[in-house]
Length: 158
Image 1 (cartoon, rainbow, N blue to C red):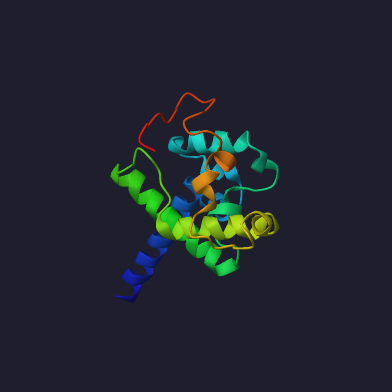
Image 2 (cartoon, rainbow, N blue to C red):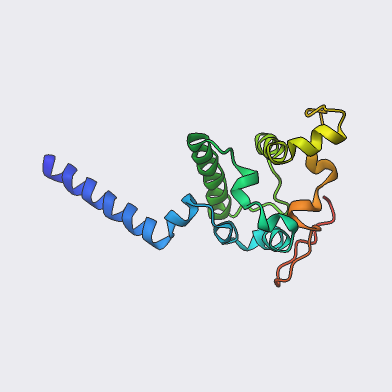
C-alpha cells in the first residue's frame, strides 16, 4: 500500500513537472505582456496596447490585476483558470469582456496612476459611478478590431 502510494505521488509529480515545462508555466507568473498574447484571441488587444502610449508606462498586470502580492496571484490564478477552461472546452467568446470584479480592479488601477488628473477634472470626485474606460475605451488598447496581425476582431456588437 505504501509503495503504490509512493509510486502514485512520484508519477503525479512527474506529470506535473512535464506539464509545467511544456506549458512554460513560469512565464505566466511574471509580468511579460507577450505571455498574455500567447492566445490568438488577444492579438488585437496586444497590438493595440503595443502601439499605444501606455506601452511605455504600463504592462497588462499594471491594469488588470491588483498590486499586492497575494491578491495579484489570486487574480492571475482566477484569470488563468477561466482562460484555460475556455480554451480547453472550446468555449471561447467572440468578445472577451472583463467581468464586474475585473472592471473594478481596472478602475482602481486607472485611479491609482491618474488620481491627480481625475481630481482636477471631476470636481475632486474620484468615484463618479462611471468607469474611466466608459469614455477612454481606446486609450490602453487602441481602437477595437485594429491589429497588424492577420486575426482581427470585427465583432460589431461592442
